[in-house]
Length: 313
Image: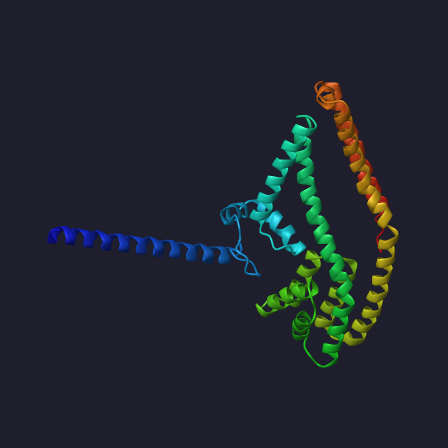
């Protein structure tokens, strides 16, 4: 090989190396810029608090710019789930498509859209159930929260310091929620705004009473220690009452879910005993109307049973 050939080969290798380094530097800088934009715009980091790499980051960024994405993220933030709006939306979409295809193939094509709507409703119900579950867990920890705040205030600590100390002492979800409040207070937000956002995120009568007591004590002073200790005993009594009511109504709640499952089981039984029966029934407008009416009655029964088993304490 001649010297010009070696020179050309060396120049090619050098240019290729510089090109790879340039592309890598450009991609790294763009990723850092996007992470900075996400953090400053409130669209969230690409990694969660647990360090888990986020999936569907592009979907999440685009979705959070819409009203639907912001609503999903608001609901997710109240549930404590380690999911982004993009991940939740992608998973729900996959489940809805799967339910659509399964219902259309097992029952009849008419039941495909119905199964998709049931999948969407189930996703909303799951978020509400997770939120209510977190609220219940937080309510069960409220006596400990009031006790810690009363002891810290009796020791002469300020309310901001008391909230930060309670956040360190308590487990999730109370520890996480109070930690968010303490961080907001550190960033300069007022006590009224931080505690008011907490009460809006996890609405309950017990938390509203605690927040009102803390806000009034922060504004006007007074015997906050005795108020918190009396509130602690009241919260303990309400906790036991709620536990007894939940135990008594467990059978009613189980019945609410059993009734729609019986309807689904009857559809599967009819279609298995007479193959193609549902396809023939839903092949006419009258049959479709009757199926929709029956499904609506099952839905009404579910809602009525749930309402009857709901007692406000």
